[in-house]
Image (cartoon, rainbow, N blue to C red; front, side, top):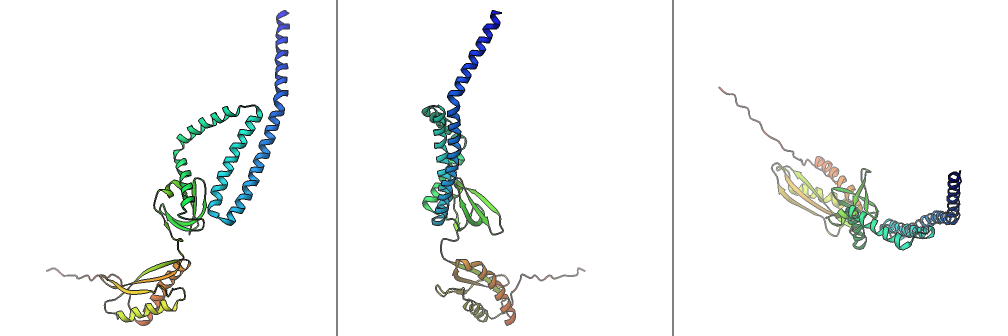
Length: 277
């Protein structure tokens, strides 16, 4: 009987201690949870407002900076919530530092991508909206995030390229300047009139308002091929007119050459058959 009463006494004591701990920590836990939820909501609203304003001023910086601010504020919020519960802030920071070191060693590539994103924003080799060719892809930059840059290709594919690769490799920015030079080549037969063909090409260029007068267009004989005399044509245009002008000229030159009796040769071979005795 004494053992039974002793066990009941210990259980009652443990229950009292548990209730005391609950009464002591429950308000702190509830307050911490409320603070966490309200803090996350405020951070979301703040980042949303910043993103809206930054996008209007500098779309290139918007996504990267807002993502960085969001992560930083959430870390500070977690530290504040931990201190409210009763966890020592210094210990919490030490644990997070050790965890950050371990994660950093495991994710060295991601850190390189982060550094690459910072370099892209500082030196600005391209901006949101530019057309670039990099890592074997050609497309329009739609986002520069903390770790990745996102392109949309002209056939509507979404390409995600790590910032580390973009900052450490060569790329072509096709939108860096307002004007571009359109290089084309047209071939005529050796029996055709070179001067006439050259005049036809020049006339088509002069008649197109997209072709800039300065610098002046160039139409010259660029080479003598196996079956054709090849013209090299170089025309300066606004960057936005490059491909429409290029495709229109291919059709216009073919139609004009046909109308004027200028041939566009293609490779031919003569096959001679000999009958053996």
